[in-house]
Image (tube, rainbow, N blue to C red):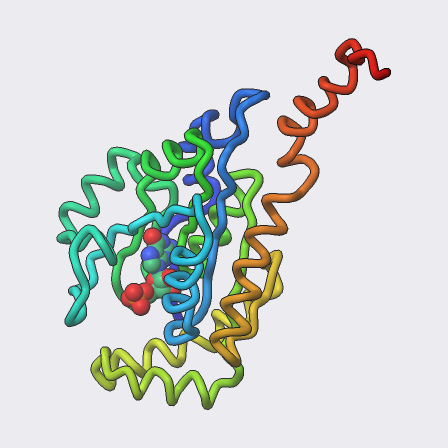
Length: 235
Ligand code: 5GP
């Protein structure tokens, strides 16, 4: 089972007001949290989302895990030593952090705050512990859980990708049992049974969340104001 690296209370102390609320008239970006089990397919779905929907950015996490073949520093993760991670943590640089499958992972606070303040939507691809912290400390948050179709399919996907040693694979599969249970705490569930369909559903969630009335109030105010301007004379 994964360890919890931090209590929600400790994270809450460090959240700046600028993350909680923006200026009344500034359309703030939307914070999307996407979680799954290892091998649940969230990486593929998120890549498709970033390719197909404009105005969404991605928070590159920090980790002490070693890079897999093909992974790039600063693109997939910021790959750091345990000491570097610890220093960042002590400086309060993480919005949330957790120990997952034996490695440290954390979300850089400054990047997320900046993106949201600039009105960009941002995706945090984090585990269920991190998602729980973010849900309890930041508001509003849109949380999405990507559900694999079954345990057997998940196991086959993980075995086929051959990125973990057998002992690591066993840890990830055993943690998956607890992780899927957490899906009930998320706002949305996307069943990843078929990539096309799941990718479409994920982008639909982003579009629907953008269209929520409370997020459109700034635009509505502008439009409604035009209805109160003196009417032009129509012959
Ligand atoms: P992987 O090692 O397979 O890239 O990731 C392992 C798990 O760590 C995944 O569930 C992934 O979503 C999660 N993870 C990645 N970055 C972060 C992060 O910044 N914070 C937390 N809490 N989990 C993360």
